[in-house]
Length: 589
Ligand SMILES: Nc1ncnc2c1ncn2[C@@H]1O[C@H](COP(=O)(O)OP(=O)(O)OP(=O)(O)O)[C@@H](O)[C@H]1O
Ligand SMILES: [Mg+2]
Image (cartoon, helix red, strand yellow):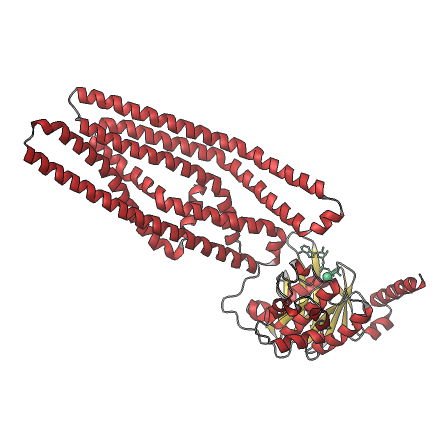
């Protein structure tokens, strides 16, 4: 039953094209009918020829011409229907493959981080490609050939009973055998094929993981180990695939044998009937024609069924991704966020990652418009997580976050993310030109604006030193740039976006002290008039913040200005002293 559910979905995916699909269905019925008439006409011609010696010439010609005329009309009709089906089926399959791919891609891109954390990007790409290929193949062959077979079996098989019931029984027994065998083997091999597919997905995930970390693979001399890991999974694929193949080989051999036996049975029964004067030669030849046509189609249908079994796991994976619901749903009737001031308020916000322990507990604070709030604390304390909640990459488990009095859950995701600019710990650049990377947040920025932002972020000089300047491609994740250059690009990108709320998560951690001082000036310009959150380990960076929130194990343990916190002699003072001691040791060395 689940098998049928998958394939119902496969048809539903055709969406608006379902009407064309229905037309193709109609054409297929016509084709099936014509295929049925064809051999019967042939039988009539043979009967006519056997009777011809006793017939007057004129009557013979008259009958022959009307028979042949009908036959020609059937032939031409068949060709026309075939052309229409072939053309439309191809178009339908191609068009919908692209549509399904685009739909999947847009859906996956919009999925929340919880989804991406669990699912490897390599697997997602593989599922997209193999899922849409599977859909394409099934749509195409189904609408071009196999639909006619199903129609033929359902409609024409009972009709053979009217032709000659004794011959028909032999044929019906065969069809029932075919179907039972196929259903049994489908049941038997489904689970195995599911296993094969999950190993196949693993293969893609593993390859993508290693390729994304190719530098590490080489520098840690992991070439052999990674190849072995890949080989092990590949062996699993083979180990699970072979038993499935064995079963389908059995089906193939048995269906062939059954066809031969049936044809022989029909010939023998036909001969006996003819000898007893119960059937003419033409009737037997006609029936044989119908039978061989049906048997040929059934054989093709069995191989289609086996393909449907092989492809089902790929389709299920594809559909599961398409059906996965985002955990950060946009409310119906969500309004556009208006953030003229940029006041941010966290009220008793608690959060844990799915299946994880609590990361934030009862976090409350308020960032007044235009001020700078620093988040400090040990690594893993929950600073980045708190800022992910502000961008609504996740929803808090309890509590509220609001911007200018609007709860984040009441506003559209687009307007929220337009209002918040982020410079990340990891700069996240695309394998596109510098210009395209910079325009990410503001596609309509002019070249002058681009250059101004880059000058402010101290990035203009190194960009012009690149071979193609602003048009230089920067490699996957910006691989052809240094860590500091990547960060300066990310800062320029945020400058261009110019949002009312800004998050700088370790934005200057990859810069040397001299550049950091210069970039700090750029950042000061950027921060002016915007509510800014700075996450920094180097405490010197947060000296000028209006307020410092000290995080420890997901809680805010202290808050105040740099000097007041230092004077209080608590957690923060301890952090500052450890850092100063660290620098002192470094200088002493
Ligand atoms: N996507 C995730 N899924 C599950 N757990 C996560 C995820 N991201 C972070 N965590 C966990 O949440 C906790 C807080 O992480 P977070 O990144 O917020 O810390 P942080 O204060 O920003 O640390 P750092 O200073 O090192 O950047 C950590 O224990 C981390 O392991
Ligand atoms: Mg962090």
